Every structure is written in structure tokens, then in C-alpha cells.
Length: 196
Image (cartoon, rainbow, N blue to C red; front, top):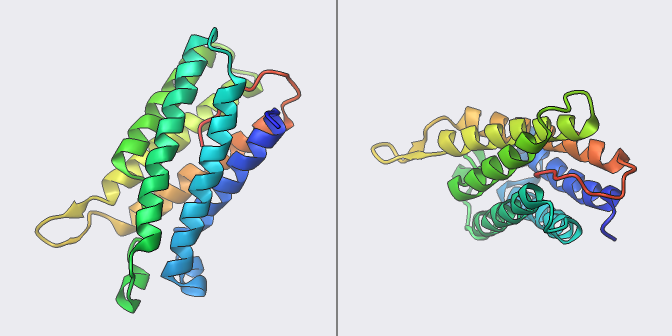
């Protein structure tokens, strides 16, 4: 149950949810309520994968273990923010607005966890572990940019940059998906740290 393939599959399913969730065509097709459910379900996949990954990572691998702990905290922040977004009573005028964007706390956790994992693997530039770590760091940076772009400007009550928040969320999810697919094909017994 804790195999790289299972963990990678759960991360991949979560990534797909976050890849399609911000797409304007998707929200127009399913509506803002179902879009909110998509983000929440994706966050549950991320948290499940992250918990399994933490359980599979030995404490003796201190950097990887801490990366997994911090990553799990980030997924829990995303569980809370996606649950809140899902439960909001969105009216018709909200359909063209942002349903969910990565929150600051979850994004910070992802950045720290990804940096820890990358720093351990940065010298092996030609193996899948390095590629996975690089992709996940890139995805975490994109989620961080999305969190900033989704900032609500107090004077206007609107997002700083709705389009940037949406496309950087999708870009981050695409990076996470690519990292998840690398993890799924991993044949090793150890689970390399792979942020959602």
C-alpha cells in the first residue's frame, strides 16, 4: 500500500484535479460548486499520498523525513482552504471569479518541503530523483506565485491578478503531475520525496 506506484498514483490524481480546476472551460461546464468539489477532492488525494509517503520514509533520512512532515502540513492547509471554498455559497456572478487558489501557509510549506528534497538531490542531475525534486520545486514556486496573485486587494475587493492565479495553479499542478508520473515508474523500494 506504501509503494511508490500507489503514492505516485494518489499524487497524480490530486494533480489532475488541480490542473483542470482553474480552467475557465471546466468551471463553465460544471459550475462553481462542482469546481470547488474538484479542488477539495484533489486536496484529499494529496493528503493521502503525503501521509503514505511520510509513513514510508525512515526517520534516519532526516531531510526527507522533515520534507514529508512539512509537505503533509501543507496538504492539511490546502484541505482547510479547499473545504472552505467548496462550502461557500457561490452565486452566478462568482462563476467568472476565482474559486480557489493555493493559500499562503500551504504554499510556504510546499516551498520548504520541495527545497529540502531538492537540496538533498541537487547533485544527481541525471536521475529521476533529481528530476522529480526539480519538478516539485518548480510546481511549488508556481503555487506560491498563484497564492500571491490571488491576494484580494482591499481597495477594490478583487484578486490581484485572476488570470495569473489560475494559470500558475495549473502550471504547478502540471509540474506535480509530471513528478508523480516519475514516482509511479520508480522501481526502487524507497519512496523519494515528491511534493504534491
